[in-house]
Amino acid sequence: MQSCFSALREHQKIKLISTLGYVTNHSLFYKKHLAGLTANDVSQFNLEQISSLPFTTKEDLRKNGGLLPSAALHDCWVYYETTGTTGSPTPCPRNEIDSLHNNTPLIIRL
Image 1: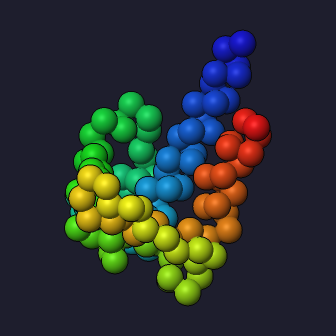
Image 2: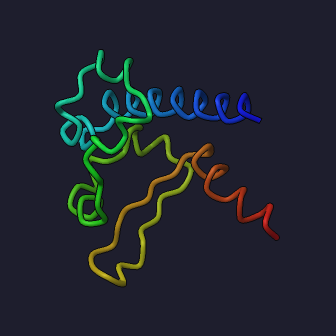
């Protein structure tokens, strides 16, 4: 059983490093939000350091909507905004992969 946990942690570490590298290179918001994180820091990042990352709040999303995307908007499959029930609407552009990751758990649950 331990090897399953080790494999999961290694997978999570690889995905975290990949995500950090991607957003710091492709999202203007995260490039600024994670400004203290160098490419070397990202490549050496581990799960124990995750609490050192600055939290992204709903207000951050609202204020920086146009700076958040890590891909060009014309590459999005769908663009929508939240209803803004608790404040200004939050932009939520999605590509095909985002949609699969966001919606598949809902479909499987049915």
